Length: 185
Image (tube, rainbow, N blue to C red; front, side):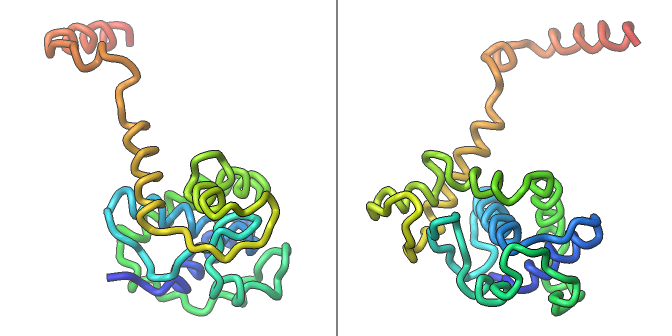
């Protein structure tokens, strides 16, 4: 069952403040996009009902844009956090939120925008299919199915062995390697 996206926003905002680096509106939007994409790839279903639109600076949920608009490019204050009750999110969702935050918080807003603009990303696919020029406004919806397919492909590619040697190795080969490794310690 999808959850309220505002609870996720509040969690991201709290994580940013707790890490000593409050988030901007752009960072929140991109974290939401990455979270939804990875959730679709891992769990196979949407996390929240809201759709992303393929705006000029990347994927945006319009209701969250409206909520955060007054902060422009400035850090969002702790007072914007509406609730600290994250039990509605559940432990697995909280874990994924934390992982997405830890993975992407190191990047500045420009880099996060760049990640969403890479060739073949759901944002790029939608804008290309709609014939939207670079930098032009667009309210085209990024389909959840498109996000699921792209993030799933990225996940599967990351999980593939680097070469066939791992697949063709015999269990005895692993035992020999383990003995050699343990002897070297």
